[in-house]
Amino acid sequence: MGALFALASALLYGLVDFAGGRLARRVDGFTLALPVQCAGFLCMLMLAVAVGGTPAWPALCWGLLSGVGSGIAIMFLYRAMGCGKISLVVPLTAVVGAALPVVLALLLGERPGPWVLAGLAAVPLAVALIVRGPVAATATAGPTGTAGRNAFYAGLGVALQYAAIAHAPESGGMWPMAANRLASVGVVWAGVHAAGVASWPPRRHVGTAAWLGLLASLSLALYLLSTRLMPLSVAVVLASLYPLVPVLLGLMVLRERLSAQQWSGVAVAMVAICLIVSH
Image (cartoon, rainbow, N blue to C red):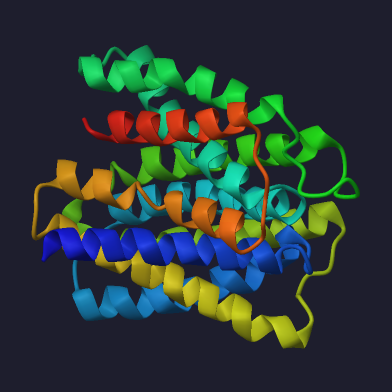
C-alpha cells in the first residue's frame, strides 16, 4: 500500500506540473503562482489541524525557510514552462533541485554513498544534453536560454525547499508545510510586485489555479503517508519519478519534439535523480 501511495503522489504531482505549465502559457508564471500557493496554504492548514502534531517554533521556522524556496521554485518553474518545452523544463528543474542539497552536504563534510555520488556526477551531463538544443517551446517564446535559466532558478528554489524542510522534526506533523505555504505566498507576492506583473490572474483562471494548489498539497500528503507505510528510501525514489508524467504528456499531448541529445539528457536526468535520492 505504501508503494501505491508513493506512485499516486508522483502521478498527481506530475499532472499538477503539466496542467500548471499549460496554464502558464496563458497567464504569467508569477501571477499564476499566487492563487496556487494561497489555495495550497489553506489546504495545508486544514491538513495540519487534522493530522495533529506540535507547531513548535523550530519546526515552523524550518517550514518558513523551506517556503522561501517553494515560492522561488513555483514562480520560475511556471515562467520556464510558460515559454519552454515542459518535457525538458521539469526534469531539468528536478535534477538541479535534487543535486544541490547533496553538493551542500558534501561541502559541510558529509560523505554520501557511491551511488549518490554517481548520480551527482551525471547531473552536469544531463544539463548539458538538455540545453544543447532549443528549450523554448516556439520560435516566439523568447530567447532559447530563457526557459533554461528559469528552470535553473526554479531548481535553486527546489533545493532550498528540500534542504530546509529536511530539518523539520517529525513531531511537527504537517505544521512545517503549512508554514512553508504561508511563507511561499509572501515570496510570490513580493515577486509579483517586483516583476511589475498582474497580482491576480483573470477570474476564469482562478478556479483552475486553486485546484492546482489543492492537488499539490494532496500529493504531498500521499507522499508523507507512504513514508509511514514503507522504507523512506523506497518511497523517495518512487515519488521522485514524477517528472516522467509531464515529460510523457508534453510529448504526447503537446507534440513537443526533442533532439536525440535531449532525449539522452532526459534519460540521464531521471537516472541521476533516482541515484541521488537513493541515499
